[in-house]
Structure formats: structure tokens, C-alpha cells
Image 1 (cartoon, rainbow, N blue to C red):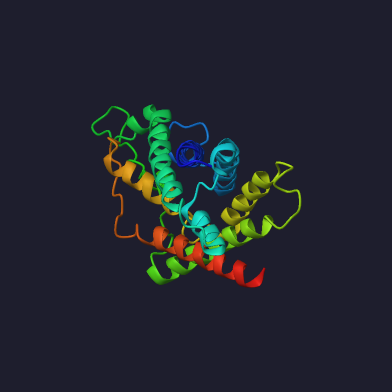
Image 2: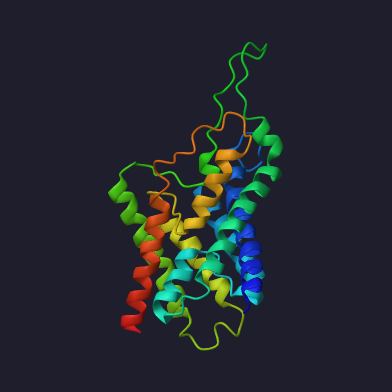
Amino acid sequence: MSNGDIFVGETIGTAILILFGAGVCAAVTLRYSKARAAGWVVIAFGWGFGVLAGAYTAAPLSGGHLNPAVTLGIAVDTGEWGKVWVYVLGQFVGAVIGAVLCYLTYFAQFQANVRKTGTTEGTADEPVPTLGIFSTIPEIRHPVANLITEIIATVALVLPILAFGLTEGLGESGTLVLIVSLLVVGIGLSLGGPTGYAINPTRDLGPRIAHTFLPIPNKGTSDWGYAWIPVVGPLTGGALAGLVYNAAF
């Protein structure tokens, strides 16, 4: 795979992933959305389908990593580091693009996120905080616990992905991406409660940057004090998964 193919594939695939993932969060969160308050199960499946669509799209060009933690885990296992930077750059650019596309898709709903006062309809509701549409927010802010959660959840993602490669014919049959997508749904349902399961540094960082600069009314804070955890945690988990896989398999 050429550097150009890798960059294009990871950019497009990650943009699709974030469009689906941030999109389902917007659908469940924002007022005047038909899916408002649909719940955590819907969010978990939305992210899983985002992985499905993004990875299948990117696979012919780049293999469809879509996640620096996955790229890092593979590099730690194989010792091949030469193209890591191309993967990560494409993933980061794609994550920002996907976040902007989500904003454009729900533009009217974001614009309606405005506090109205002095209307004939009485007191309006408070504006909806929007950071959770783009990035993760812990339910209990405890840096050590939050970091441990992200490390464990990322190991639970990357180690099976590496092990799936040992299953003869899984990749050739075209079902590998489907299995990984279901894995992401399972992680969301089982391990996503404490932090919102970033398990992907660019999935959190790229949209957080977009949230900072997008002209969203009453968008609230981008919470940069927490932003290091969904970057360091997944990268640590990806590296650990690569080490464990290399030692055990």
C-alpha cells in the first residue's frame, strides 16, 4: 500500500466512522431530533455501524485501521513502524472532517440550541451541552480510574483484532470487519459506561478540536483538562495489546 492510498483510505474511512458515531450521539442528544433520548443501546450500535461502514470503505486502500491504537498495536507486534505516521495523520484529518459533517447534518438542530427568554410560551429549557456529541465525558471525573477504564477497554478492542488475524479465512471471507464492528458494539455496551469509551485517540481529539472552533450556539466547554485521558489511555492500551499478542501468540 502506498502512502497516498493509506492516507486517503484512512481519511475517508475515519470521516465515515465519526459521521456515524457523532451523528448518532447528535440524534439522541439534540432537541428537535426524531431520535432524541433513544438511549445508550442506540449509541453503541450507531458507533458499531460507523466502524462497519468506515472500515469496509477504507479496507481496499489502507486496511481500514481507523484508530491509532490499532495502528500502534500492529506496529508493536510486527515491528513495522515506517507507515504509522501516515495512518495516524489520515485518521486525525478524517476525524475532524467527520465531526464537521455531523455538524452540517444537524445544523438546524444545533442552531436551535439557543436559550429563549421573554417569550409568550414561558420559560424555555436550558441549552443542551454539545461536547458529548463530539467527544467523551466521564460519568465520574476520576483521572486514574478514567485512564484505567480506557486502557482496559482498548486492550479489549485491539487484542481481539490482532487475534482475529489467526482465524483462517476470516479476512478473505469479508467478515472480519463485521466481527470487529460487533466487537465495538460489545465494548460500548459492556465497558462504555464509565467514560463513554473513546478507545481511539483521534476519535476523541479530532472532534474535540472541531467542537472548539465550530460556531455552535451555547455549546459549552470543550473540556481540554480531560482531553489527555482519551488519548493516553487508548495509546497505552493499544501498545499493551501488541505486547501481549506478540508474547502469547
